[in-house]
Length: 214
Image (cartoon, rainbow, N blue to C red; front, side):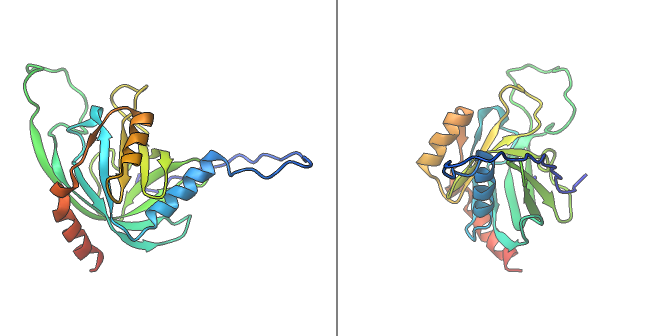
């Protein structure tokens, strides 16, 4: 899911004095950052719940993660990463002119990922990056992603780099269980999505628990 953590530099702003002004809520960026960290630090299993239609065939539907350890804000959180599913055989490769019929079904391959990763959340901007502890992950999985929404039960990420329509970058929804409120938020921010049937991914739950306990 160049494997160094994202370094984000903030620009300091000197506040002006203001009397009798009540303290408001934290800026939206900070709310997203704090909520994302709290979500990732949970002992519950995190699952892919929904993804944009534009990346169907480019992402395995069964992806889950178990908590390993919390390392501190600047050192990320350690989690497992398990993924099984089918993707197009040319995913991640340079785009070439299409020679076959556009109506012909794309050639698919099966991938399986079992890795320990460290997940970093930006300190200033609401961003997230997955860094593998050892072996490399599939293309684009280590790219920086933007946090569009973060709540108690789910998080919505937007791709930071994408080969398709740059005005409509794809999103992914992650959570502990299927929640209608989270799915509705996804549709509002990112448009229609492809839901994941978690009952088809129960084998990852069992393997993930075994890996986390090793």
